[in-house]
Length: 128
Image 1 (tube, rainbow, N blue to C red):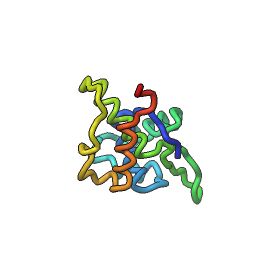
Image 2 (cartoon, rainbow, N blue to C red):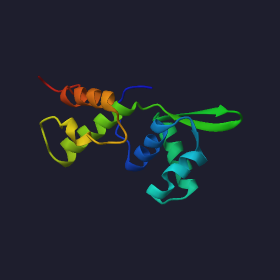
Image 3 (cartoon, rainbow, N blue to C red):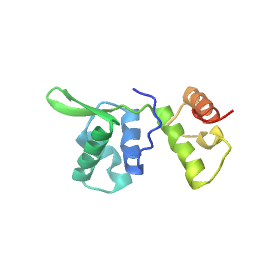
Image 4 (cartoon, helix red, strand yellow):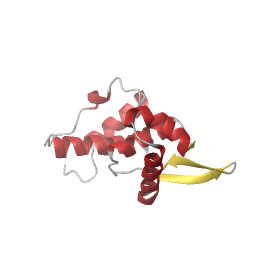
């Protein structure tokens, strides 16, 4: 998986989170995991997966004759970029975000929290 500063849309993030928990998954399996959260049709899941393929966010492969998807966006780097974008664009903050906002998350473990903290504190392109 590649490190990234790509900011996924909220619906793309929902699909990525499902794949970060378990991959590869078929489109139907992904849809089952996000259906309650997103409240949309299977065709919407397929359309979003197609856009994500075009953007290089996911990869598609054939497994036992069935198309499956796996994330190409690395979890911690993507979450850091998402948090950074929120802090700068939405909250108009100039200081780095605190990793404390991720404490208690079911999405990241302690090792990932430490890496996330490093990314948030030492953002590429920030002037020292």
